[in-house]
Each structure stands twice: as structure tokens, then as C-alpha cells.
Image (cartoon, rainbow, N blue to C red; front, side, top):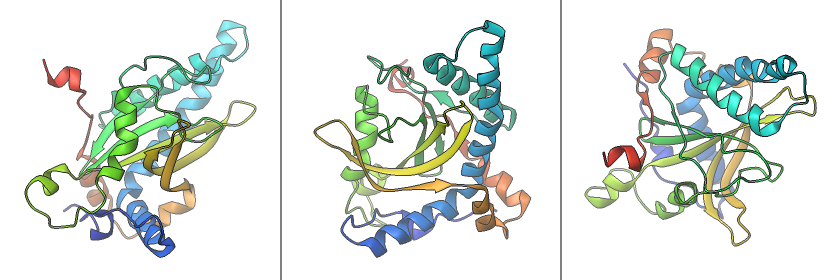
Length: 230
């Protein structure tokens, strides 16, 4: 038995209605809690290893290398839990001296990117694929639950899981963001963004381990357009 996806996340919130935004955010957190907890555990395990690697090199921490190592280690951790994730398509250029470090995965009707946060929050769109990803939720506005035909086939929620480092290069936590659109200055406007922490485990305290495992089995890597064309 798997968790049903709440109707509240099948349509996006009204950006001018705080009540709608809060309801959507809570529904997303509850529905995806097992996945968010697993990604959080993966980062807690991976980031110290990525930081300690520089002791072997005998030099200072390079944030670009650190981000790449964290991405690699996080993918290995998720793989050890039978969760398949794929690397995000390479960017055309680097933003703020941090290399592209995204992981992609799919859960039910949700497509997810795991990205390293920047001082501005979500990394700017450094590739066409990421620009389309950030803007896709906006295009889904008005698609109602139960819609048929083209609307039904087109709907897919996109979320970003942002991880960050503190000044000593330790894990500073995970944030969940629901992107809305890219502004003219390149920054990303979100329907909502919120911290994820251990206390959120209580959200799924009544869900059996068997049910959690069943839900997580439905996670799969996002197939890139390049791979799909082969």
C-alpha cells in the first residue's frame, strides 16, 4: 500500500493567497516526508566525508570540488538505499564559482532537483534545462485535479531540495522550495520555501515502515532528453 498523493498538491497555490500557499506547502511536506528525510540523511552522511577529503590533499576547501564530491557521495548513499538518482545535465557555465552539482530524481508525479544553495537561495538558471525546470510550475497553473487529455498529461510538480554549508564547511541544513518563475535579474521566485528538519519526522509517525519502503520504491531517476533520444 502506498500513500495517496493529497489533492492539495495536484494544483498549485494562488500566489496572492497566503492560506492557499500554506495548505499547499503542508500537503507537499506530508506527502514527501519519507523522501525528504532520506535526502537529509544522505547529506548528513556525505558532507563531512566531502569536507574531510581536503585533509588528504593538504590544502584549503575548494567549494566547487566540495560540491561535486558531495553530489557523488549523495548519489552513492541514495543508491545504497535502492534510490536511483541521476546527475543533472551539465551547465553551460558556472555560477558564483560553484560547479553544477545537481541530482535529479522522480517520485510519483513530482520531479525533484537536489542542488547546492547560493547566497541568493536557489541557483540561477545556468542551463536551458534548469530554466525550463524553474518555470514549469508556472505553466501548470490552472490545471485542475482530475483533468483529462493534455492538461492531465502535462501536470508534474517540480521541487528543489537545497543544501547549504556553514562557515566551517559543515552541513547547515536542507530547504524545500517550490519554484514559480525566473525573474528578469535571473533570480528565482518561489511559491514557497521552507526549512526541513528532524522534527518533521513526526509528520509520518503513523506511517508503517513497510508503507514508507513501498513509497520510496517509486522514486526513479529523471531521464535526460539526450538519453531519451538514443
